[in-house]
Length: 191
Image (tube, rainbow, N blue to C red; front, side, top):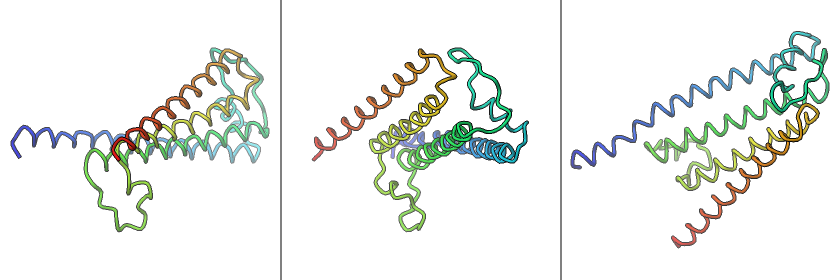
């Protein structure tokens, strides 16, 4: 290879620190997951400080929200909101894995996992187009969890906030369908 094409091709390795940074971000999410889970377990055993901490995270306080009294014990709704928050963390972690592994495999270097028993099924046919559709689908899942949390906790939100969040989720859905349709059209065009 000539020097300039070699330099351009080697520039793909500049993405490596970005993927390493995403791994560190995932570590933060793992830590956050365990902190929230410990608070939930402590609150289930009657720890009022843990209930107050949970209330701070699941009961919205700010513009577009209606102030309510802080609970002193866990309710089914509060437990459901905490569990949805934990599911949200897991889904974001899954999204990070897709971006880290799929992005590295697609844009930086092959991982040569073909014979590895733990190779993700989707990795064998990943490319930039498949990765876009998978990421859009994951974002819709995350948005769905957030919207469900909002609807479960609707008494704490004003109508403007509920409509705005529903609208944003709808835009995510339409965008994902447009990405998938474009991907399908391009695949048909190739064949």
